[in-house]
Length: 487
Image 1 (cartoon, rainbow, N blue to C red):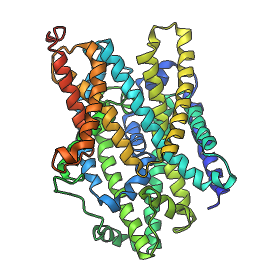
Image 2: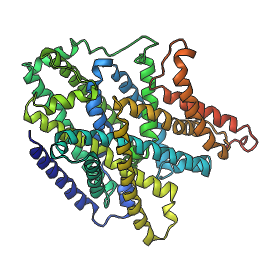
Image 3: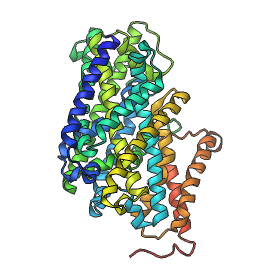
Image 4: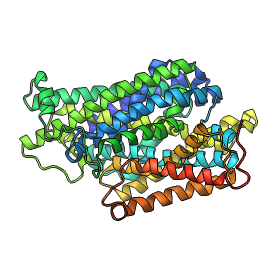
C-alpha cells in the first residue's frame, strides 16, 4: 500500500473525527468538557474504554513480546480484571458520593492541601509520560510508512499528529471523546480480527485450524510457577491487580470517562462489561503474536532486533498484502489516539481543577483558562515524545509499566492509606514521603539480585513503592499532628 494511499485514508479518518467533534462540541461548557454533563451512556463508555486501555503500545508490544514471555502476559491481565472489579466496588462509590470532577480532590478532604497537590502532580507526571509513549508508537509507524518517503522530519510529523488530536478535542472534551473513543475502538477491533483472518490465509490455515496452531505453538505457555522468574504467576497476577487500581482507578484519564455516567450503578456496569471484553481482546492479541512468529519461522524471515518491530514490519512490508497494511495502520492509529485524546483532556482537567483551582475564577475567565491549558498540554506532549525518540528504548511496554511503578506507586499508597485507615497522617510530610518512596524502590530494584538471592522485581515494583509510601504515612502520623483519628 503506497504512502499516498495511507495518507488519504488517514485524512479521511481525521475528517470523520472532526465531524464528530463539531457535532458534540457545539455550545459546550466547562461542565461538558470535563464531565460530558454526566449524561453519557454506560455501554458506549465501556466499548470506548477498550481502545483507551489497549493503546498503540499494546497493539505492537503484546504480539512482539510473545517470543520472550509466551502468553505469560495474560497472568497480568487476569489480575487487571480483578483490579477493575475492586475499582467498581470500592473507588467508584467514593468518587460518586463526593461528586468529584477531579478524583484527586478526595486527597484534599482526606489529608490536606499538600497531599492533594502531591497526588495531582504525580498524576500529571505519570500521564504525560504514559500518553507520550503511546503517541510515539503511532507516530513511529506513520513515520516509517508515510513521512520518511517524503523526507518529513520526525519532529514535524509528531507535532502534526498531536495538533490534530488537540483540534478535535479542544471544544467538546469528554463530550467528544466518549463518541470518538467508541469509533476508534471499532477500527481497532476490525484491524485485529481482519489481520488474524488474512494472516491465517497467508499461512494457508483454515479458520478451524487457528486455535490448534496457537495452542500447539511453543510460545503459548501461559503460566510460570518459578518464583525467581519475572513471569512468576503470583507476581504477575497481584501486580495486575494493583496496576489496574493505580493506573485506572487512580488515574483521572480513565476515571473521568466513568464519572460521566448518570449514576453509580451505570458506572459499575460499564467497568464490569469493559473488564470482560478487555480480557478477551488481549487474548486475541497474544494469539496474533504466536501466529506472527509461526509465520516468520515458516518462511525463514529474520526476526527484528526489537520485538516491537515484528508486527509493523510484517504488516507494512507486503507480507500479508495491502489490506493488512491498511488495517494495521488504521488499527494502531485508532488505538493510540483513543488513549491520547482522553489523556490530553484529563491532563487539562487535572491542571485546571487541581493546580489552578479554576472554579474560583470568574466565569468569563474559566473557559479561556481551560483552552490555554489544553494547548499547553499539547505542547508538553510533543516535547516529551521528542525526548523519548532520543532515548529509543527497545521495549516500550516495559518502559511504560516500569515508569508507572515509580509514579503511580505513591498514588496507590496515598489512596490505600486514606481508604483503609482512619489515621490522620501529617500532611506536610507527604511530599517528602512521596519522593523518598520511589528513590528507595529504585535502590531495591537495582540491588535485588544481590540482596535477595537472585530475585528480580517485575511489575510488583508498584506494590513495593506503594507499601513504602504507606509506611511513611504511618510514621508521619506519630509526629504529634498526625495522632488524631478521624471519626
